[in-house]
Image (tube, rainbow, N blue to C red; front, top):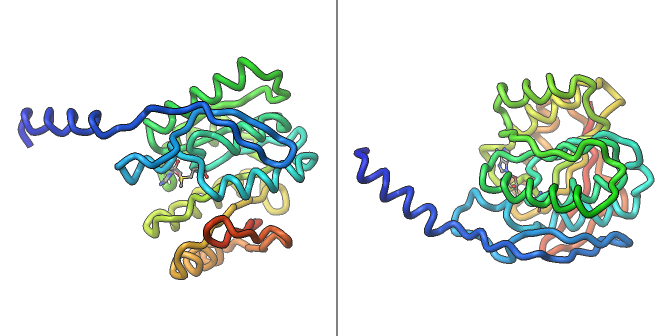
Length: 234
Ligand SMILES: C[S@@+](CC[C@H](N)C(=O)[O-])C[C@H]1O[C@@H](n2cnc3c(N)ncnc32)[C@H](O)[C@@H]1O
């Protein structure tokens, strides 16, 4: 590709990028929070993280109902998007590391972290964003070096929608679960069913990685599609 063609593509990317974020109020049980997000998707498939997804609504309602279980914990979230789940956790947890692979999404995630760190008196001593692409060993190793004590919980909301990324997601999840070891860390996944093939793939990949998957009773709900919370552990 010559220089002129490259310039043309860069120009088109910025033309299509919608970063007209709106400060939006969300209510999850007793928790009300405001953050910047889009209300409709950008044209780029990889910018799914600019919106708040139904899986985040299910997970945040569940966490808000069970907020006591979060108190003092250390949590890492995968595919955080604008940070609606991680920011909620910041009200109860001691440490929250929100991650995403998309640089544009990381920008709005950091803006939402700044918004909450400056206006709320959070108990959380560490509310941070880190770049993490599932399956990227350099990035996961850097996170594991920065947080050698590991995490109590790994969280994910609506992050299973692209088949090719599911094995990589479970590689990353397994590495994070292994830092603490069996019985000391679990992956809470808010899963929204949109295709039968993906439903089976998620369960099979967890199994293939030697992980145990349990549906959390009472968490099935209809958010356009059927959503559910899984607890996945070593
Ligand atoms: C559908 S959005 C969900 C965002 C947020 N959790 C929510 O429920 O509102 C999926 C998120 O996962 C991120 N993501 C997708 N593929 C990824 C990958 N391979 N590694 C890391 N993050 C990824 C996207 O950038 C996006 O923020």
